[in-house]
Image (cartoon, rainbow, N blue to C red; front, side, top):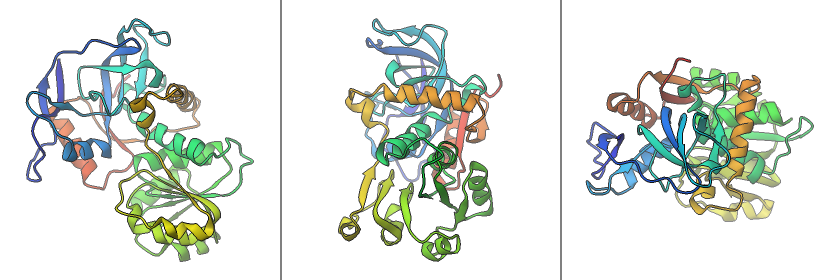
Length: 338
């Protein structure tokens, strides 16, 4: 089958992130679905893996961690899905990626594709939805109720995870949501996602928060450049507040958090499938909830840039756009028409 990934170390001077590979489809495990891929999305993890992971011509690496498609075969113990079902999911970083004609994925981390979305648009949602959901409801333990009080700062609100996190907090809780963005288009996007306030992360945060009527933060989700904003974030937290992060900062001086008894939460959505935790099926459950919320109009799709086909040319262009640091929401590829 055709797949896209790499078989040589990354070169900073290389024009392409991926090359076309020809691979045999692996045998499905007991709980695996064999999915014919119809839509994919790119994420920061794709370029991180390309730069940092090893590969060789004898052991190539397939990229891609968002997928949507149609189930074509199932493993011996599959019980949640059947051949012909339309699904979406974020896969497992320890296995082959979704940039391929066919993909194997454990059914426990798979959800029903939203009926109202094309395959490409559906592929925009899984990785970011799981990350945002787990951060908000598992790590921060926020209650899903409009009666929930407090505030949430989302640093990097216009990215893929921020786009979903703002929506979840605004639509499913009573939190006041403050997002950060620095350009007119990213400010407008955060407002469209539902942020109550948008401030500029290239300027001191505290005066902007105070101008918005926020004197202390209850929750802070640092989605990018945590090392640049960590001290300022700690200064703004209320005693007992929670800070969450998803990026890869350098060393952080966590002793700064002691006097306020703050807690630090690291969200990594691949942890459940990588370690096959007892609750890994929570990812499939929450994706089904996200699917329902999209079809009900509660959550909106976050795809902002799309390509009609999954090809080496379109993937390299999409990955270069992702690596540029200017992407808003998600970039998707594949079947963009119903």
